[in-house]
Length: 274
Ligand SMILES: Nc1ncnc2c1ncn2[C@@H]1O[C@H](COP(=O)(O)OP(=O)(O)OP(=O)(O)O)[C@@H](O)[C@H]1O
Ligand SMILES: [Mg+2]
Image (cartoon, rainbow, N blue to C red; front, side, top):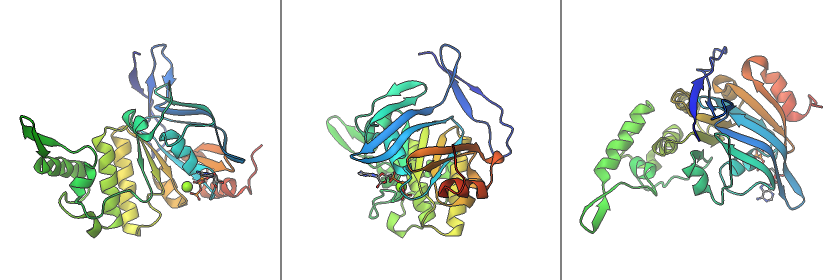
């Protein structure tokens, strides 16, 4: 399908301008879209008819109380399991992921809360885990540690992170670990990065670093979905916020049109939505 991109100037001070793909028929399509997604686990209705979309160059906050369905939504987008019904679309095309690697191949990367890093390996080895650079002569192949360290170093400086490629992950701060996990997403040229609570367990200074990393991802044209319970982080870095409550999306607002008080009311149910 013929597709090209057009920038929609954004009037908010926070956004650098999100970008929608234009399909062959001239219609704007989101980089990632969910349509009427339902997920049942036996009798539990974890998601009930959720519509959600995100454009390139946009940061969407996803908020909601414990058990509201945020992680389930991320797992549907990341191909961990299929929805009971409904559709996931990338650049306007319906997807049927049988496993997470298929979502990754289509440009969806997840930074999990536990980051899934190997503590006893270096930052560079973690960035390239499962997609190592190899070199060799004839039938003999071996790992090209030098090339991986150089490429990882370039990714960290692109992200303006002080993480050094040869440092062991077990000696790193929470913020540096986040940088390693985020550098992995740069390697794969992801279109969408899903982050499940990246700032839940790190210090104030490191939170600022992670929020800067998110801004840089947005600046390079990625779409970022940030799951967070931390209102200041969402109001600091997001362009838009979607609120989940008991498996339903109860609000989807630009940050400039809402307030922390309203979002808190929507999360707790103090503000009712028809
Ligand atoms: N694999 C599963 N099997 C059965 N029930 C599940 C499963 N995963 C999630 N659930 C249920 O689905 C609902 C939504 O859970 P989910 O993990 O998506 O919530 P959440 O918004 O991420 O919450 P938290 O903020 O606590 O991480 C909950 O009732 C949960 O118990
Ligand atoms: Mg969760």
